[in-house]
Each structure stands twice: as structure tokens, then as C-alpha cells.
Amino acid sequence: MPEASVASLTDHQRQCLEHIHVAEQIGLTLKAYAEQHQISLSKLNSGKATLRKKGLLPECESGFAMVQIQSPVPMADNVLYFSHI
Image (cartoon, rainbow, N blue to C red; front, side, top):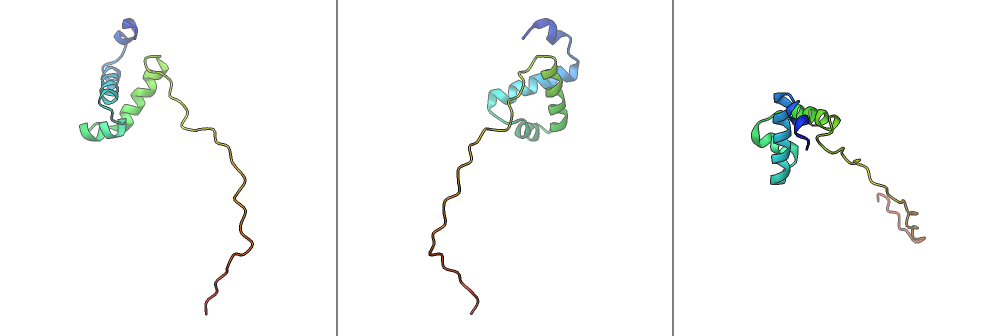
């Protein structure tokens, strides 16, 4: 991480960066970390987005995954239907 970039951060951005790194180091999601430390998750996420724009954090990967849909399994011809007796 370039020193000049970190030096140009606001106090809030620097704190967010530190919290994000600590959460990663101890293996917690930001949500869990924020709850444990009584920190606003929305402020952490906002700071994280700003830090990404500044190039101090990597861009996030898409939350979507490519899937291949297969044909549905054919139904058996001898399906039993129940009615109310």
C-alpha cells in the first residue's frame, strides 16, 4: 500500500482501513466485527467503498457465480395422486 496514499486519508478513512484489516486478520466478516465492536456497519461499508475507489483496497468480486442449468429430472409415469376421502 503506497505511503502517500495512506497519508492523504481522513481520520475516518484511516480508522476504517484499520478495522477492515483487523477483521480480515481475525477471520470475521465486517458485520460480525462491527457487532462485536459496536461500530456502524454502514459507516464501515461506506469507508470500504471509498478506500476501494482510492485503490487502497482491492475491488470486490461479484457475488454471483456462473451456473449451468440442467434439464429437470423426468417424472415417473406411475405417479400416485391422493385425494381427500
